[in-house]
Amino acid sequence: MKFFIDTADTAEISELAAAGFVDGVTTNPSLIAKTGRPFKDVIKEICQLIDGPVSAEVTAKDVEGMIAEGELLASIATNVAVKVPSTWDGFMACRALSTRGLTVNVTLCFSANQALLAAKAGATFISPFVGRLDDLGLNGMEVVREIRTIYDNDKSLKTEILASSIRTALHVKEAAMAGADIATVPPAVLRNLAKHPLTEKGLASFLADWDKTGQAIL
Image (tube, rainbow, N blue to C red; front, side):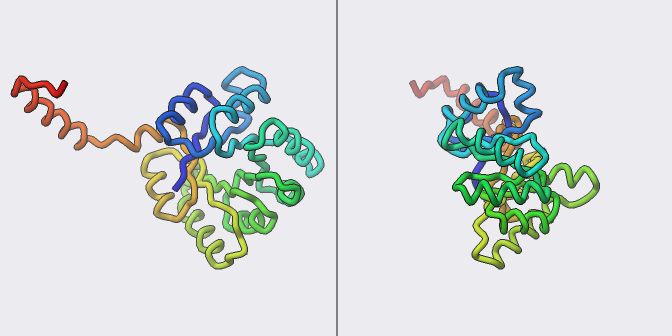
């Protein structure tokens, strides 16, 4: 499973990319707003930091507006993925943009039916929002499993499942087990994947024993 980093913080992206953990980046208007910088400048800089897809979201609500904004966003860099919402207009815009050879990420997906429409419209990625479904007392990961089954049943559908609204390390593991192609995770969640209390305890014990020997490797 690939990792996309869910942030617009270029310092975080640069650090994680250097470690080899970044296959792509997802942004949204809220994340861009936190930077306090011009939208296009942020997207351009991120695209220069990594080779993978960088999702940049349209803000228009109508088909024509989404298409126009999508084409502008795609002109910023060749690795921009245009994000459109899982609405009827969004699916129509997805169709138009994907037909023109652009990478499209259909976001704010909350059902397998929406994911099916997105794939039929030519989406490169579908982004089911796991955490937000869980917030409503539903099973967000079950939607990922449903989408996986639908896509596997029709080999003509090439859309990749990008598990989104990932909140915990457990979400990441479950997304991988459910068959998601990608998980987009906040930097803090990605770092938490390396943590386990028994690892820390074992390391402390080994180092304590080593210190008793009075030796040094270098």
